[in-house]
Length: 62
Image (tube, rainbow, N blue to C red):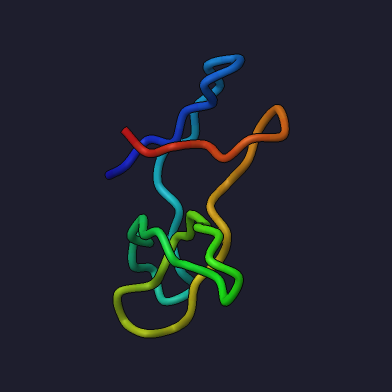
């Protein structure tokens, strides 16, 4: 289970689950303009969301 941690304040969040109950998987995608975005994606193809943020920055999984 990934733990997302803020690099500024060290707040952490464990596990993000899809509505189907499956743990979301951390991925990095590239936008049309070339910027990379961290997302949490359902491995059962139910979609993806932007990874959590804290202190205005992306929380990275450990």
